[in-house]
Length: 480
Ligand SMILES: [Zn+2]
Image (cartoon, rainbow, N blue to C red; front, side, top):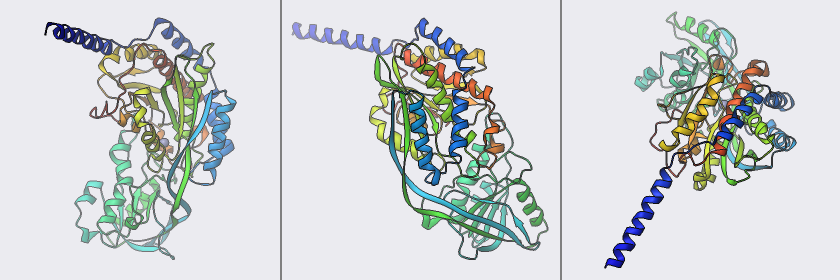
């Protein structure tokens, strides 16, 4: 009896000991902080990232998922990782429905006949041969459409004209633009609409450049032709509607889903010297829309991650943990690359030290938020201290989300940051022919590289982890 009590006491002590070890605060050694400061200052003057996005947008150009440039983009990325000296370069397959765009035309038929400039939305089906001609019914907002009597919608082309305003954090995209584009067509279809038009989800005032983007259609049998008007054409349509007469519009879209396509996530690694199987995951998405050259969305994101890994690669010694750069496949049509990645790697989530993805253009990072275990808050504060001199504030109260594709690994339990960029002008150009290299300021891009290099390196050298574990952050209400 006494013997087993001793054993019990011993095992209790062991258990207490292990709890103490688990709860020890994660810290970043002073030497790593010093190296991170040097990396930050070096990255501010490093042009690797700019050369990556310049090369990608010049030598490959637009990279519509599954389109003619998809494979060229992947080959280019593999070659670039190798040329920059990454230790390990590989791909992981990603399958998704192949959506193609061939042609798109629109016109007001009555009462004042005239052409409209527009662009089809991702997953929009084609209109019937000869086009779809129907009366337009206008709604002021998505909520107004939701509340509408289906009888008022049936057989008509639904139009929503709510306008986005510029915000540093892109607030109106999540609040207005994205829901109207993603959910609007699905709601209109369910109410019996024949087609769908929206004022583009964008903040440019008077360019005749419509903004494409994906819709929420998941079943081709329940999809209707859907397109975006640029602001001047949306204004024109609204002036015509204001006459109070029935307005008829013709849509002639040749686009749609044509079977399945298998692309790939392209991955490059700087292998850790001490814990090679523990990774810091950073990246962007390699695909883009087809209208521009995919510079800000998301050549910049890929370039930032590559540039950050490259300055770490060039240190005299490899970091303790692996820096993994993921160029994701087909983010644009529904996070296909990110979801495939999270499915494949969910069981290893505890090995993911910390991660986040850049997918909000090339404006400077101004705020950091984090979803980490409480014992790692001090390490995040150490990172924040190195980032403060380059304009990044740390909001300890908000969760991090990991960015677009890596939000999926965060959902599985990966500790994640959100590095918020200045997106004041991002939605002027997002998903339009204006998404081109000239929108990227090399200095601002380099600031992003510095931020990614600092946090990646400090996380790689940390004594302790950031709390990644299966389902660890299921209820933190991440922003992304
Ligand atoms: Zn993007």
